[in-house]
Structure formats: C-alpha cells, structure tokens
Image (cartoon, rainbow, N blue to C red; front, side):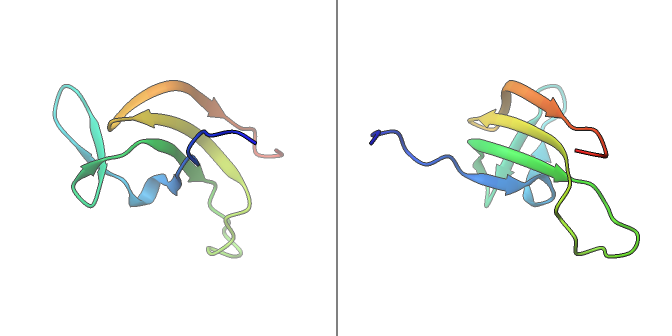
Length: 74
C-alpha cells in the first residue's frame, strides 16, 4: 500500500485554456493537476472513446512532465 494521492484523469475537452504567453489549463476556475487525455474521433460512433490520441501531465495548470502520443492502431 502506498500513501500517494490518486491522480485525477480528465478529458482534455473539459479543460479551459487561459493566458496568452503561458498557457494555464483550468477546470472550474482552478488550475488543473493530473493527467489530461485527448481521444481519437470515430466517424462511425462519435461516443466511442476507446482510442487515446495523447496523454499529457499537468501540475498547477501547466504542462509538466511527459506528453505521450499514440498511434492510431494503439
């Protein structure tokens, strides 16, 4: 067992991008800390969110750490 807090994971579509030079990503007017996921669109079923396009780590509203890109086939 670890005492680390659970990491929050949200769709990038829910995050609001603010700022001009330094982008700050917020949700409910608070800087987001966690992992943002962008999903690939599916023309046959727009509600299918099974394929991930990118996974981005955020800390206090700023991109921090790895940004992972995934191929269409997984």
